[in-house]
Image 1 (cartoon, one colour):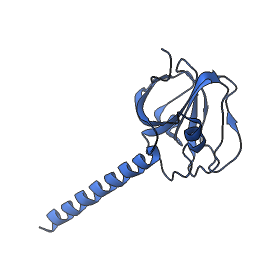
Image 2 (tube, rainbow, N blue to C red):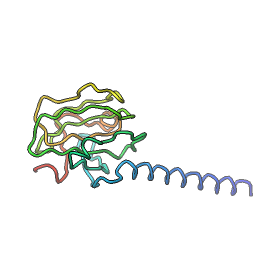
Image 3 (cartoon, rainbow, N blue to C red):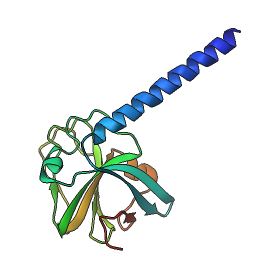
Length: 157
């Protein structure tokens, strides 16, 4: 009987934690259009739920003040036409991996483990069609490397 009670408590806590994680993820994308994005690596395919910073106002806000980002979430900053993009971490409370992606969907630069709240400029010298921000360490953990293909409607095949 005591085991059943512990199992029910464990189940309730697990459901509550999953709900809190989902709420944290929805808070990240609140007010932003959302989409799915795939990155193809030598290790396989990796899917992310992404918020799209598709206006100057959304790009300026980005992931500022976000306290946590689930491993399978990110934010995409698309640019048309492609250009050299410069990012920073002002008011960004968490470290990020930034993937600079050309207009055809190829990762051309990775800037990992960015410094939270830094105003240092983060860039890639090549013109890009977008920057994808992921939780710090996700690029290495998933084997994402320069040259990998990113599949999303923002990129030409």
